[in-house]
Length: 317
Ligand code: ATP
Image (cartoon, rainbow, N blue to C red; front, side):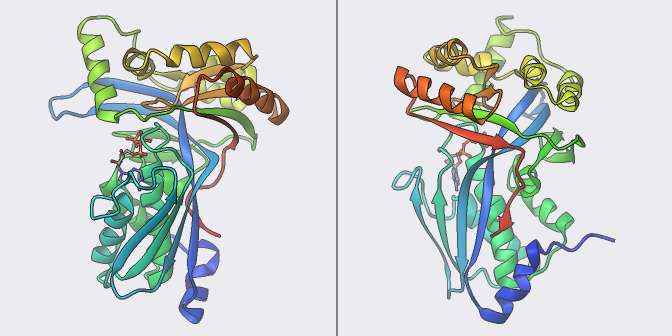
């Protein structure tokens, strides 16, 4: 039997009052991102450890006669709000699955940078699934939502889930990492411009074909052991990303971001997913604040934010 997906019982309350549903969804970073060789089907097998951090998008859903999307914040005026937007695609996929009309007025407040390697689009898709499920009272099981999520993108199932989790396949097959609760403190260096995820994968394939890429990371065993030790210095030493060399090749200026944070005392630094966002591990919140201030002062990134993780996935608030 599948578990019913009832975020804090808000779907029931929404049906009674007809009020707006607001969902908060985090960004993700990859503590370990092992990328397998390019397969004949054009995909790479991934072996990753996802980690949800406290940088959030917010999606508000209200009743409407058609399906509309408005937005503010990161990427406003740049991101298409039509059928290509992952929010709209997720709402339509849920409506088709539940056989209900896809009618809602959706508003997105975006803080997750666009094309930043933080999976903001996937986060918004997860938020739309949870918000519309509550608005429409479709009451799908968690497994059903995860299945729709996987059809929308590899990172979407994790962003329903949140926390820290192992991702395999294309990343869509997610299992939670069980560790004693620990809060990790991060500094997130946001770049001026995004990087295309497919371009970064192509660059990795090219570097590998020329034997110019570092040896692949393989399984996440060391990272998982480090998480259990709850020591930020140990976790820092275990972070790894096979896409980092490719992101640096396409955006050499990222090397300066990594250097400045290291000089500022970061325990470790890594490109997040396909980049260009870089994330740094701090000993505690105050240490993170000092590293962020030094990054901002050096002018090597558009913005340096502090964040913590793990945090839950898409939830009604
Ligand atoms: P990923 O690593 O998941 O490929 P990313 O974090 O680098 O992605 P995203 O911000 O998720 O980047 O967006 C990737 C692309 O997805 C965008 O350039 C945009 O064309 C498309 N997209 C569609 N809907 C959204 C959305 N709601 N938010 C952000 N991007 C979206």
